[in-house]
Image (cartoon, rainbow, N blue to C red; front, side, top):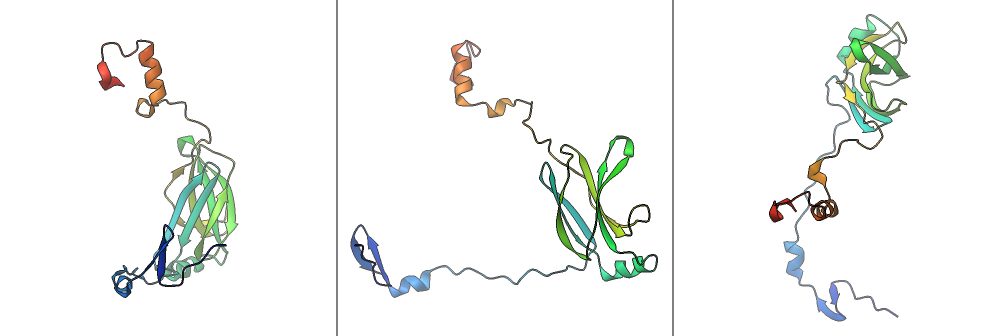
Length: 174
C-alpha cells in the first residue's frame, strides 16, 4: 500500500518535507498572449510541403479582392493545385471549391514534382486567378542516392582505417 503525501508536502526518498509558502511566490509565471486573429486583412496564399504526397494550403482573400472579382464573375471561389512541368508548361492537378479564408491538405500522386496553388473564381477554362502561391518542390519519397561524408558513422570510419584508407593521417581522420 502506497501513501500519498498531503498537498503542500514533497516526498523525496521516503522522507517528507514541507514546501515553503515563499516557493509559490518565486515560481515563474507563464505569460499569456492574446488569441490569434481569424483574419489578417491581407491577400495571401501559402503552399507548404508536408510529405512526398501531401501539400498544405492556407489562404485569405480580402473582401475588397472578392468584390472586384464579383464584378467579373459570380462563380464560386476555387483552390487549384497546378503541377509545373518543364518548359513553362503546367498541368492542373486538383480543383476544389473553398471559402474566402481557410486551409486544406491536398493529396497528390506525383512525388518529386513542383507545384503551385492558385485561388480564383470559376472552374476549368473559366477560371480567373486572384492569388498564386510560390512554387514548392515535393521530395521524391525514396532514399537519397547521395552519400555525404559529413554523415559518415564512426563504424564506417573505423572500418576504412582498418583497411588502410586513412594511412599516415593520424587520429585527425578518425
